[in-house]
Amino acid sequence: MARERGRRRNFPNRYVVPLHPDGAPPDFRSLFPNPAPLEADLGCGRGRFLLARAALAPGSNFIGVDLLSRRLGKFDLRAAARGLTNIRLLQGDVRYALEHFFPPASLSVAYLLFPDPWPKHRHHARRMLQPSFMDLLHRALAAGGLFHFATDHQDYFDAALKIFARDPRFEPAPPFEPAPEERTDFEMLFLGLDRTTRRASLRKR
Ligand SMILES: C[S@@+](CC[C@H](N)C(=O)[O-])C[C@H]1O[C@@H](n2cnc3c(N)ncnc32)[C@H](O)[C@@H]1O
Image (tube, helix red, strand yellow):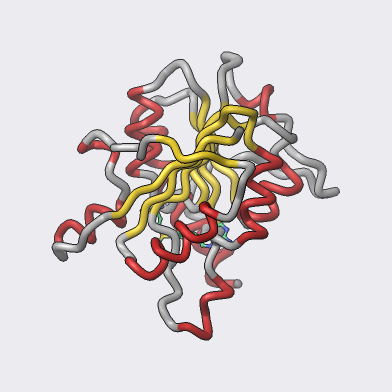
């Protein structure tokens, strides 16, 4: 933790949303110059995807959520270099943000791109995508809102498809196909290793 805090001080963090000491949720509408549909990248990492997406879709506002301040710091520097005004970053746990920070039905799109696969069977409970995650997603997404999932991990993908198929609150939607510049930092890494990306998308009914 001390190392993490030390690193955090090295970044200006102009894009990271200051959190209230009393735990009150941020006022998302006041974070952006223009009111627009809100999209969230859950576990955004260093932000290659969201930076490109925000530039390609100036009519939407974007929030990147990640636990790691060092990754968000790099993201922050890259966003500042591009002068983007429709991105903000939230440092914290995705599940907590979905449950306590995003108002109900506030998100038009949520992305979960290349989450940690936790490949060992005994670690599967640590995966982000669980039936309980679907409850949080359902709460935060607006009716008709989209959820886009991608992974290079076949077993995680199969498990996700089972969870999706058992959840009648969502219906299948066409998978999100990123433009080349929208590929995430991890996808770029996996492409170099010749791994196949699997994608699935859902729409909240
Ligand atoms: C494998 S990386 C993928 C990052 C990015 N989506 C990409 O494709 O380049 C997973 C990211 O999720 C973040 N993460 C993992 N668990 C998280 C949680 N519970 N809340 C917020 N972020 C989390 C990690 O810090 C990491 O940046």
